[in-house]
Structures are given as C-alpha cells and as structure tokens.
Image (cartoon, rainbow, N blue to C red; front, side, top):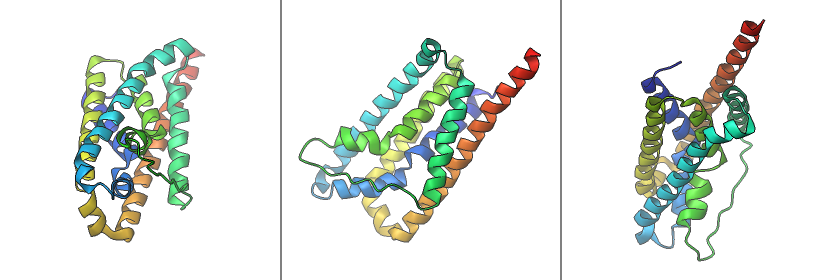
Length: 206
C-alpha cells in the first residue's frame, strides 16, 4: 500500500484533473459577465460550496461501502471506467455542450459550485479515494489534497478574466485536451489497481 505522501499526490492530481479549473474558468467568466465586481465573492462562495459537497461525499463514501457491501476494488474499476470513457470522449471532441444560465438566483452554489466545480466526476473521484484512505495519515492526505485542489482552483477563478484573454480559444483547447489525457491515464490506473487486487485475491483463495 502506498504511503500517505504518495497517496496525497495521487489524490491531488486526480481531484485537480477532474475539477479541470481551466475548463471552468470561461464558464465562470461568462456567468459573471454582468456582475464583474462580484466575481471574487462568487468565486469564494462557489469553492466553499464545492468543498462542502466533496467533504460530504468523502465522509459517506466509506460508510456506503460498508452498508451496501461494495468493495474498494469494484468502485475503483467502475470509477476508472467512467473517468477513462469520459476523458476519451472529450479527447475525441465529443464533449456535451453544457448551457448554464442565471435566472436571477444566487449562482455561487448552483451551478458554479455544483456541478461546474464539483461535478459527478469530482464527487465520484473523492468517493473512490475515500474508500482507499483507511489510515488516519491517508485520510489527512486526502483532506489536504482537496484543500489544495480547491485553493488552486480559486486562484485560477480569481485570474480567470486575464487567463481567458491571454490563452485565447486555441490555448484553452490545447490545455483542456492535456487535462483530459491526464484524467484518462488516472482512470486506467484505477482500473489496473482494482483488477490486480481482484486477481490477487482470487489466486490466493485457491
């Protein structure tokens, strides 16, 4: 089993890749175009909302495994497949366009916090990682990874207007592809980890 430091690095890279703040940045800028003076406040509130959702899923993840009789290996394999397939579709240019509009309500929680920042992929990732974090050191590493990923995302949202102007559409496209490639690799690693443990268990039971 990997140590807390290695697990923390894996957790951070997985969460940060799934959050994909560079993809969230243009959505954030577009949704706050009529209230530029409120951008910092909305960014902070959206990160806070996403953090609460992630903590809830990380907390109930292990409990759900026990209640439903789900093994960590099974969730690793299924979660890895979801990450891999989602990333491959994105790499092939099959992203589903997501239109988000504000009708006057507070957009910091929904849709900015959830699902733009903490979408299904992020929450699934957190649940997979929480199932693997059996020791206090690993649980602390997971918490710090979430804090760091959300902290960096907040900084990117603060700088989003300047980043969008600097990168342009081509730069955003290239960076998004690189992030999805990383996510696909992480998904494949989850599948390999889960499968190898299942095979080892079967061989040992004979």
